[in-house]
Image 1 (cartoon, rainbow, N blue to C red):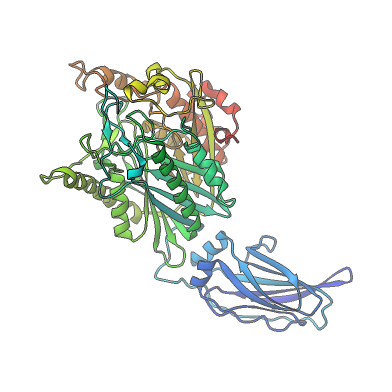
Image 2 (cartoon, rainbow, N blue to C red):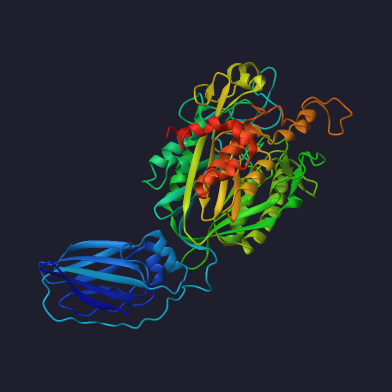
Length: 620
């Protein structure tokens, strides 16, 4: 239904004509009213969602100025989804919808688009009213997509397989050192058949985006000694090239920590500068591709039990009884027809299906899971590693007697298929991420006194062992014996994502979940933004890792480094400090202030972190 009205503003008359119209049908002209008309051209819903624009023809008397707005019926005129202005007498106007408007159309709500033509000038004629009867909006495709509308999503994928011209590339994860008289290490001898990749997903709402990326490398520092190739450099560059969609605080890149992936850390022999540049450049390319491929989607979140797939290394310890055994899924579905655009999987199991005998670069089970999920859904997938502290994949290996690469592929593909089966359950249970389309993020700099001199020393004197860490030795990443790192918290609808700079113990994610109100879903990205080894918290969890550094599991034999959780831990307090930083981010994003952080009594010991504003980790 529409109408026209005339009012006075000084000596000028203002004509406002409103035409209720649908995106799915041919749209009738407003009809002549005081010499001014507007027509929304006939279009299909699919065309509107692909281009995000509606086209109108305006015809007004010569010498008049006009303003054309497009908004949903019932929404205040002061907040249009599109607006154009001009002068008569005739114009063809393209009105670009906001992502939120496109989402409302795509979600098949019984909502109508309203075109308002406001003409200012001397308009002759009498007052007239034109009324139109229109049908409700109908969905394109079968059924209504299940998910929250008002988002756009895109995905980018690049291979990071080492090339012949990249020189020597060592694989990381087993033992320590490489390429020295004391430790031969594992030089990459080609690439396992399923490849090795970096995958990125961007999710946008109302002109603001978050970007999540997973690089299939053993680890990646926030800043490195070889040049501007650290994760912090990458976050800044992607944001700078995003056209205003991204802030570096909303860019999170993790390592998948495959023990058959290239060693960007340097602890197992390292990689050449050429290969380091390749990984950096390909990650930037994947991120920008994800932004370039943004399309209107609905976003859904679901979970499924994954207990049979997870092994807890300290299962008998009462201070470390549980592992994060829930698979979580974020799925973006095309707004116009409900097809899957990208599936984001969050699972907490080390990428260690392949053992130390494998010498081919591989992302381990995560590469195979992405490919298998893509085969089943017809859309790309991005697997994000969760809380990797003391958790390993269970039920791995190949049931048939095989050898070499055939055996290795059988093992990783077999475990990946089990993961994807559980992902199918999570997808089936998925529902909207919330009523309001929103994405946001905060990142923070935290600094802690190192209590592990041997690990700290590898930054300076690790070269003879072939274990020269590439981590930057300049502030804020290393200031004397203080180690600096980064945490990040992102929000997608009512789903909260915590990004931790290492292999977090499950207690960290569980505490964030317990003390945070207002979220309806949780995800964790491990080894994100930096790699500080194991993040152990609370302090009560330390005795068993310490014991297992010296003795075997039963405790009846001396077994040096039977387990490396304590050895690769830079500080006795860094786990708790990271926990408090994540609680700070949760409070800010969920509009609860300091309440989540205040609820954890240990955080008072780390109030010095509050002196640094959000974004201090990227120079903000």
